[in-house]
Structure formats: structure tokens, C-alpha cells
Length: 219
Ligand code: SF4
Image (cartoon, rainbow, N blue to C red; front, side, top):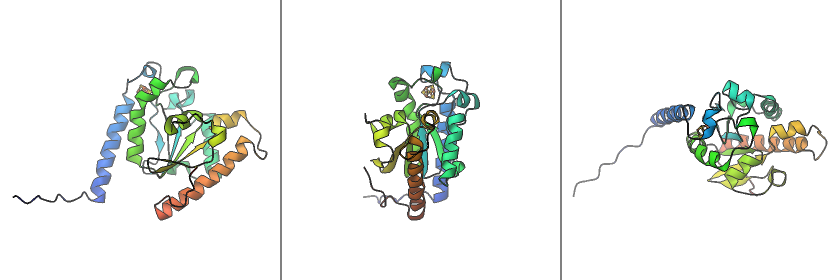
């Protein structure tokens, strides 16, 4: 019987090159996507922004008007607040990756329909596979319900870690909700978000140091 030849594994550099090629292909595919009706009303596809190799991924609902105009996620008022929250927690925005469930703006900033989310999920899942984050933050109810398949409201489950496909996932308030709830007193959404972002930073530091999630308490 012929001996089965052992094919050598790809080197780290070859894997990285392959990943980069796949990322560019996925991005080009999304930028020209006409998979759902949101393609008819968008100005730009908002693929995402930040470090494509980050161990920390943030997922929002969908682009708003400013994001649609600029082709970048979280650049309007809510986005500026998100940047402030990250900075206050000691996280540089350029060191994480930020994207949304749907990549095109739903008209009048309505919640994306289940059909739109189902169709657009191919782009999000490809991003998650290629970025391979250890920690995922879900901003608001829509991404929380979509990823975790839960009916629990954000107020009840924010700040908790959930296990999802070998990753640690935490729902947090969406920054636009914080804009509508300005109080910073104890127990307010802003105060709770401050607690959450500190936990995210603490866990992110440990993941970067140890490469694993063993320190995380789920649920
Ligand atoms: S929202 Fe997603 S599926 Fe719909 S057109 Fe945009 S990129 Fe394609």
C-alpha cells in the first residue's frame, strides 16, 4: 500500500497571509452586496472598523445616518460616546474591532427585520471566524437577542458573561440608550456601563496575557 504523504502544516506567516486574502475577499463581497432590500437605500456599506486581529469584538445593531454617510461604524453621537466609554475604561478604540449585525442602514433607523438579519449574517459570521475574538460585546437588545437567541431584556442580562461558540460574550447598553438616559448616579445605565467596561478591560487584559478564558465566570 502506498504510504500516505504527510502534508506540512502552513507556517504562521502563510496562515496570516491566507487570512488576509480571505478578509479582503469577504470585505469586497460585503461592499458590493445586494442581498437584501437595504442595498437600495444605503449610501455606503458599513463593513466595520478597527483591528482585524483584536481579541475584543463589539457588535451593534446597524448603521445610522452618519455611519451610512461615512461608511464607518459608530461615528455619530452614539459612536462618540462609545469611544469615550472605551477610552475611560482604558481601551483604545483602534485596538478593538467594531461592526454591526446588518451592514446597511435601515431607513429611519428602524430595527432591522429578521429577514435582513438572516441574510446579512453571512458577513458577520465570516468576520467572527476570521477575527477570531475571545471576547464579544453586544451593544443593546438587537445584537444580544440575535447572537444569544434570548428574549431577556438588556437591563436584566447586561454585564454578565455568556459562553457562545467558545467565546465569552457580554451584553452592554447601547450608547444611544445612554444618550437618552443622562443620569450618572449609582444604579443608572451610565453607572452600570462604567462597571461593565471595567470588567471588559480586566478580562481583555487577562486574555491577552494568558490566551484563555479560564478566569471568566459565566452567567
Ligand atoms: S444589509 Fe447586509 S445583506 Fe443587506 S444589502 Fe447590506 S450587506 Fe447585503
